[in-house]
Image 1 (spheres, rainbow, N blue to C red):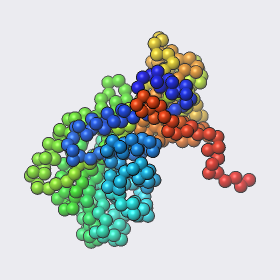
Image 2 (image 1 turned 60 degrees about the vertical axis):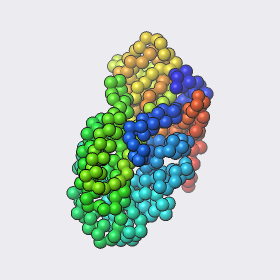
Image 3 (image 1 turned 180 degrees about the vertical axis):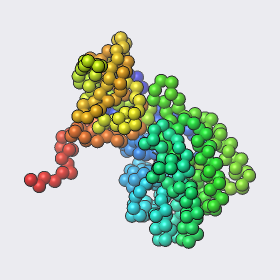
Image 4 (image 1 turned 90 degrees about the vertical axis):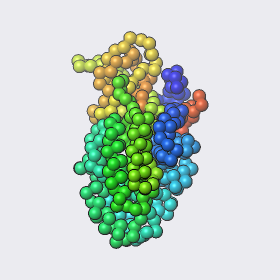
Length: 399
Ligand SMILES: *Cc1c(COP(=O)(O)O)cnc(C)c1O
């Protein structure tokens, strides 16, 4: 998608606006499916971006979906995913949310002993489940997004294997799948092989396993010089290990992954306008008409998003600090070379498809941005920009 097309969208729909080029999602999905065999299934981690149109698009690609809340499950069903293509992987939910998922007939992934025991006691062998294992592998780009380490709240520790076995034995519970997700932005593909080997060992203890789900953590490049997770060699290595294991053990199972960021990050651009150029004694700030209320990743994860000036694509570069309009430290980027910015210019933050709109809020009583889908050369508004009334929508005035 060309810069001119982005600029046209900014003019037509205003800023701030998220734009998703769906062709990019298709390309990423194709790269994954081509790197593995036909039997490997990919479950899009919906929490990265849940606009219903994006879910429908991903559904039509043939992907499956991984949901972390019951409402994501409902969105998935609305988008056309059949229950066998939905995996529910919640964390710290109560048994009633699990039971709702059960009535919807989706795959359920249980991540703590307490619920496993309650579920087993109530339903015995009538509804097979997944167990989320915490293998205690530290992986991922940032502590906040690493989920497999010893301090993590996710999964059931591998050291509690005996306890899981006791519950299974006592209640008759059927474990149809084993799951692990060690974090996001994993560059070192050997982490997956390490995880897989732990899974192979676990198989011995669970005779009913049909699925092994290795989660995700597939990385996309944000900065110059950064690399994407090499899914091609990952595919080769993983398939080789699995083929050997299956042959040796006589066991069979399906391999699943749950890419979120990998599928949608690069499809997304976030367009903002420069409100103010502010020269201080220390730097030149570009103050834009957005903030961490719309894109929290830079402040929350120290993430890097490439920034370009769409209104001035050829001028000399200057060094800027790009900040938002929220009344708290609110920095998108320090010391960036950007083509000279004038007030009113439209800037693009790249790689904003994943965990962008999805993590937005109304902090400072500001309105959430619009979302536009770009498909087959055409822009479609897929979420209206919020209006003032939305702020009061659920408030009850008692004074
Ligand atoms: C967030 C999450 C994912 C996706 O992670 P990405 O880094 O976006 O690919 C996959 N599985 C589970 C269980 C998750 O919570």
